[in-house]
Length: 307
Image (cartoon, rainbow, N blue to C red; front, top):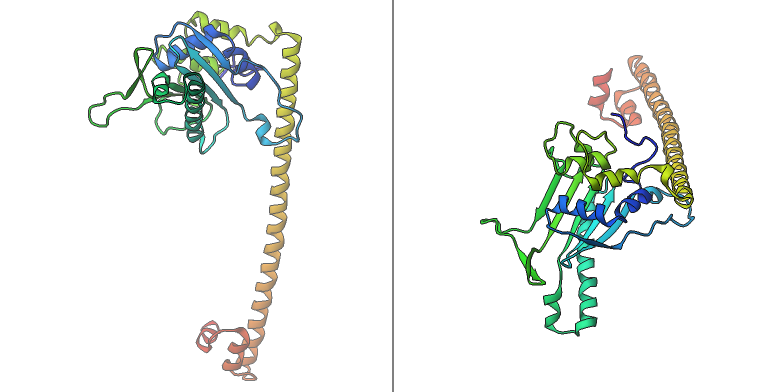
């Protein structure tokens, strides 16, 4: 399928930071993913664009992992995580982020309010949205939204914050590889098309249009273009290093396999040669079956069955 922007990806670390540094885009995205009536957001983390320091290249250098933390107008916080390479414990890690953020918030409240039981009434919920380029759920749904509910009645578990009842937990997942052009999800489909770099099948709303304009490399500042070029070069070098390592391992494996096969072949040849010689001596009655079988490490019955 044709890409809207062949030379750039919305899930690239630097590009995603540019996208989510725009409060209007982030606000609309959170509203659509979590179905929250938020009007304003403040970006607390993830708005600073940076390139990793010059370290020896490794696979971790180019695994896109962006942690954007936004705070809604009612104090609720949302972590947005982008993961383009599959990780077996990605959901565990996302849950750990949520727990860590709740703990950090509680510590700040305690410093402000004092270490009393009253601190807990000020805790605001922390939610998470994951944009993933691999599948974590076995169905065909490209969008999943989870909350904590009572098993029998389905009642949502909530906490009170700023006089409002809010979900205790909300986690949403946008699985880009499950995108289908025939999808009827009018809310999330445009975001799937945007982050998947697919052609739009409907006129995008203002926030998505703004996000798409940020993918215009020509409109970037010279500093942003330089950082993006450096990051892409690091990615390419890391991929080349990984390919080289795989080829080397494959070649070594083939060589070891040939050597092992040659050794096994020689051993089998020796064994077959020894059997043929001893069998010939037994047939000529120059050697007994007992002595021949003992030389070959088998029973008399096994030896005579092969004659």
